[in-house]
Length: 128
Image 1 (cartoon, rainbow, N blue to C red):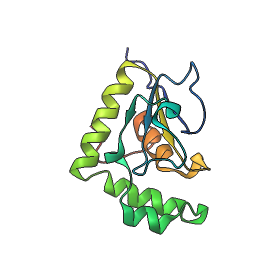
Image 2 (cartoon, rainbow, N blue to C red; image 1 turned 60 degrees about the horizontal axis):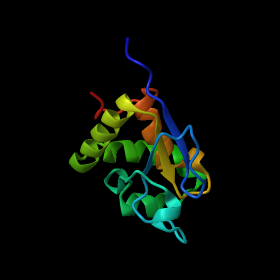
Image 3 (tube, rainbow, N blue to C red; image 1 turned 30 degrees about the vertical axis):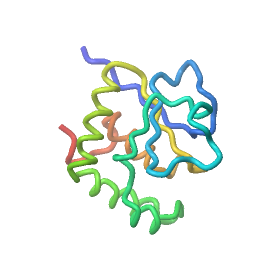
């Protein structure tokens, strides 16, 4: 019986906890004012992040989140992002995965969209 993927979402500015497991930053731009040592990352998977155009259009406006999610799922079908998603799927098979973002409201971030796909609660045609 396969175990249910354990995927968490958090802010990069928060310190590592025992529950974090493997910590992956999913933002394209490095977080302001944060050193690599302080970030305490296991990996930076910037290739899965939304395009610059989509990120700028969205601007973390809660009223645009549903449309952002729809557009971002479309971007996740592109080769580079599909490969990155496949990589994250492999990681979560082996360990708890915490997807990190610098945004203040993680509930309306790309990390939440990715986590939903990895957990199997959000459909993506790049899922296999």
